[in-house]
Amino acid sequence: MRDTPPSNAAAPLLLRPPHAPSPELYAPADQIEDLRNAGGTLPSWNLTARQLCDVELLLNGGFAPLTGFLNQGDYERVLDGMRLESGSLWPVPVTLDVSADFAATLEAGQRIALRDPEYIIVALLEVQSIWQPDKRREASAVSGADDLAHPAVRYLHDIAGTHYIGGRLIGLQAATHYDFRQHRHTPNQLKALFRAWGWERIVAFQTRNPLHRAHQELTRRAAEQADANLLLHPVVGMTKPGDVDHFTRVRCYEAILPHYPQGRGAALSLLGLAMRMGGPREALWHALIRRNHGCTHIIVGRDHAGPGNDSQGKPFYGPYDAQVLVQEHEAEIGIEMVPFKEMVYVQNRHDYAPADEIQPGETILNLSGTELRRRLQTGEDIPEWFSFPGVITELRRTHPPRHAQGFTVFFTGLSGSGKTTIANALMAKLMEIGGRPLTLLDGDHVRKHLSSELGFSKEHRNINILRIGYVASEITKNGGIAICAPIAPYAATRRQVRDLIEPLGAFVEVHAATPLDECERRDRKGLYKLAREGKLKQFTGIDDPYEAPETPEVRIDTMALSPDEAAELILAKLWELGLLVGRGIGEPATARVAASA
Image (cartoon, rainbow, N blue to C red; front, side):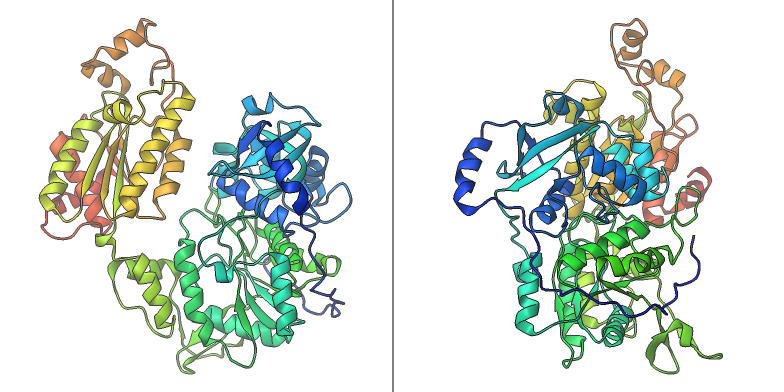
């Protein structure tokens, strides 16, 4: 891994003209109606959120030179050498993943209709290849490791379909966005704006986070260094799970724009990209995408698009790996890298300065992302030297203090482990405290009212848990408390529910760690007996596995604690997390939480 920044001694690039049209993949206007009618008779695939992002950038030219989802030959070349079969540089596979059942109905040469969530046909795909990828190989090649701590690897194994379909796209309808329409531009629309403004040199700033004073200072300096105009080009598609929602982020960007100097133009445009958090390869991908949008320069940061630490607690990528890879290829792709310089606030100067220019004896003030989140959660002041008041106002609107946010308590454990009993005890204690609406989503009740048509196959169990997670996310988002008490046997599905809820509020996983033999002894419904006799198939703990959580927020030994004591233990954790205020119920159990968590 690269631990030192790359040299900036290379000769200046001969930058290609930024305003050449980007090739779009839409059908001619006079053919669209006939193609749409024909598409109504074709096999259909309902696009996922990530696939919708990919289709948008394929059709509008943001992913040029791609003409559709990668076929198998291109896919293999991208994994091995970051190039298409044509030889063109392309570092990240853009694939259409589908289920095995759907793939089995297709053959090369036919067309399928790709539909959005409203079942509107947005494109046709001319199928060129169908294959089952080696996902472990893909994870190692693209993400650098087959490690589930990486969000793209987790997506690949837990969410993506088992088979890939490659082929040429024929676009029938552009993406429709109802939010921030004044900031949404296709590559060709953005290039037209650059021509109208007289911009010839444009430096793009890639971000998935709100901007603060340090970011404003570094982007201002980068534009000056490149003698270019600045394009804030944040990703508003899919980013890292847990990131601030894009609505809040865009309002923050709008709040910071007036703080740029009037003499050098700065503009905001939104990019509907589904990030893979792929570090060096992702940085090179970002550079290609910004080149397609008419930019001549791109700011590449330290650990650009890095996902954080791996399962061993070490960074996935070196801090300068991304800068090195982009610099190696900038001449070929025709966009120049401007290295990100870490900016720090120097107290005695009352100003920001590059970290490598700090003199001995000068005092640096710092506010980490963790500390910022803590202050937002507690309602503490955030210093004005750190961020602009308008940005903090927007963040506080979306991130009220922790005790005013909704949250989910998600129980998991074997049948008979005591989940429902403890959940009812917890519900009573939380209702005694009051302050938020509360909903209990018990496994049996959900099966009766929400998932009555589902069986007990692994697929149906996952659907059931994801339905519970969706309802809990809506309750959490709207400031309520959701208590969920299903068996939830599969770790991957529980991770999906956590990823769904954590951007909206706290997710507290509680493992009722009751041994199997004790659950059988308690069995009031006779289910274990039926399962042992072979009369009840796919029963968790008997002929279907239960994957115990490795690091739940609370683990309960129901052999040692009564339901009342277990509920107090959970309450103490909620107090510890800052989720409760008011009457001190649960506070005396803090010591037991530390001992049992």
